[in-house]
Length: 115
Image 1 (cartoon, rainbow, N blue to C red):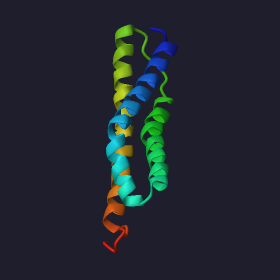
Image 2 (image 1 turned 120 degrees about the vertical axis):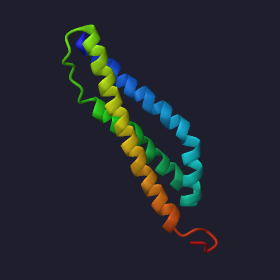
Image 3 (image 1 turned 60 degrees about the horizontal axis):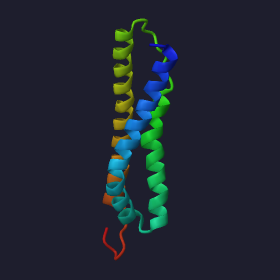
């Protein structure tokens, strides 16, 4: 397999998986953000911010990939290893986002005076 082709496969695979995971999380995240932010416009901003974080970080990590393997079998396992590292980046971003949302869910003032 061509090193350039493996690079493109790795970046596009990361992008596709992260977009799919964000699409799965989007409706749940949106409801939480509307509740926390109080308006649709604020929630829309934080939804876009979350998408950039959850998709952009793993894709940014994937751009640092430089194929080293020479055989097709080694290249396959190198791609799988790099892809798993990129998804760990997604999980770190998700945990960070979860901590931020949890903080604001616990301490942000709510409509009606409930804290």
